[in-house]
Image 1 (cartoon, helix red, strand yellow):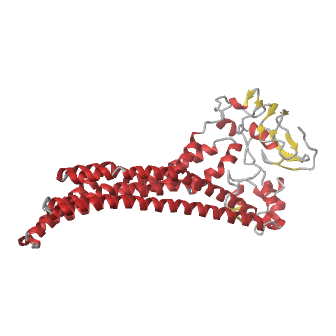
Image 2: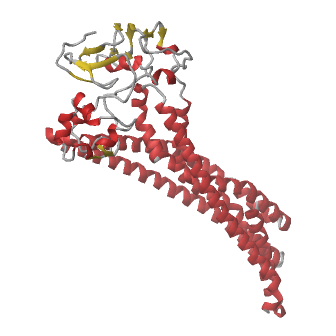
Image 3: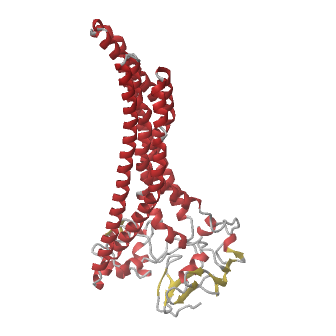
Length: 492
């Protein structure tokens, strides 16, 4: 509102000053115009201050919205089943790291331009109508052409923005996979092929971005051309009537100065629309991830795991290749170590996820003391579990920092020895003080996977998985710690 008032007011004041100075030579003294000039400078200052304040608040609001939306995406995705997380993590990573940043132009540019067009354009047309109806007719005829072309351009660019976001997600996922697998690829002599594929994806993303920019530049040219023609028609009409004495100079200058402000907000909308398209596409994808319904509802019952019998009854979980596991039945007795064995993809990890309440079975069930895991309160049940994923998370820091992540240990070295981790420590340059990078950079793949001794827990059940042949496990001195042993295996 302040910007619109200052724009119209400054045009009227400036036109009045120029018209009086041109028409009356006796008024060409600065002292006679100190009052109007002060008003003009004040209007310009208020307009500049309002623009600055609008930009500042827009940036602050955009940062808050992006942070909140990113948090909602992370909360929604990480709260789903592991298989859903694996399918959605690449899209979520792109949205959180780069995609949602495209919303910043939407809040700092597009929305203010839209609000300005709603206020300034009608107000300016009304003021022009108060001075000259012929110029108003020209404006009313030419003005609708801009929204029409904006709609056509928007339809043409919407799919391009979605495609560009998908291309960026594919490129990022492939690049991260390549970086993680570079040592293995180099060892196998396959480092050339993936590099070429990444280069092809980068080139495709570049072509997509350039195509979007080409459409944006062409659309901006069309909008500028329409606005220029509209102002030119008004200027020609005013000039002819001034020559023939059908209009006063003050009226002509006022209308001429106001005419660009009729088209300027719509031109800004057209320009900011393209800058905000990527953010709109990212927001739509984010809302789709957030709004995806939960696969199951949380239970409310509680159970004490200590001394309870865990039964797996004809457990089956649907997968891409059928069911993994398929009709698995087992009994996990308290105080014993149970090992699940089978080929790759047989569903060993999936069965453990069902026991932990992380995956919903397609058929069958898992009960704890006769209570279905699906009926248990997830927070209460998981407080009694120690979950060891196939890919343990290693945070940047020393080996010691990772081992005491969930609490200090009374005798760390003895615990490492009991878990069989002392052989890994012997190979590290600084032992427990060896510095690791993100994801365990600095450890070999086998050593990184060897961190499968759990956090402190009072568990009385221990269930581990082994591929192809049963591995033997025993209880370490710490509660909840399992490590290799020379005793016989426990089979399911």
